[in-house]
Image 1 (cartoon, rainbow over the protein chains, first blue to last red):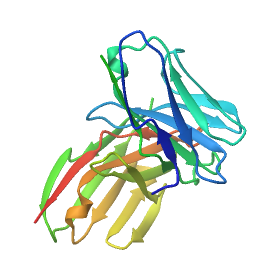
Image 2 (cartoon, each protein chain N blue to C red):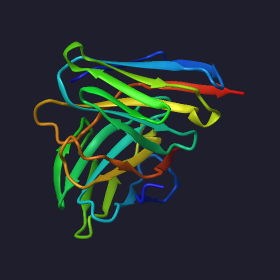
Image 3 (cartoon, each protein chain N blue to C red):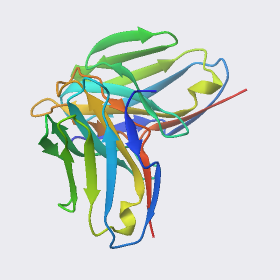
Image 4 (cartoon, rainbow over the protein chains, first blue to last red):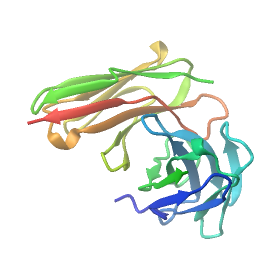
Length: 114
Length: 111
């Protein structure tokens, strides 16, 4: 185990709905990154939060949003769900944003959009 | 953006065999990591190796940054090594540990 937890583990939604995914970072970590992993592909970077501020964003539309709380846990919100949003959503925590900082991944949330 | 290609895409080994996985990347990087994703989806960091060679038990990795490739060696493979191996990179400027993953190598180790 990495000490990073995510909830829920599985989720089924219908197209057009909204969803919130949660991530609790490892103790002492101030950085959380979110990734989307479609079936059979590598994870894709969505965005990163560092000390409660967004610190970079990948090629995802604005309906993907997030926040980080003072305890450094984080939420990923997706509005107006589309079928292609079906994926494994992974969060990773680290103790900083430097390249040498190991990212510890949570077990993921599997989202199915019908 | 940076391109990350991995080969082979699939690999089947008998337990005890050795293997080499390759990762090619299209731009200079300040960060290269190897990950193992088990069949349940858990990603585990194996190596942070932007250059040089590292070893950890039966696994070792080498990155030749000037030629933009990295190799992951698995020796005496075990069934627990099965899963998908990803390399991931971060660009040299403005990175901040925001990783671009390759498409992975699916490894199956059989008895």
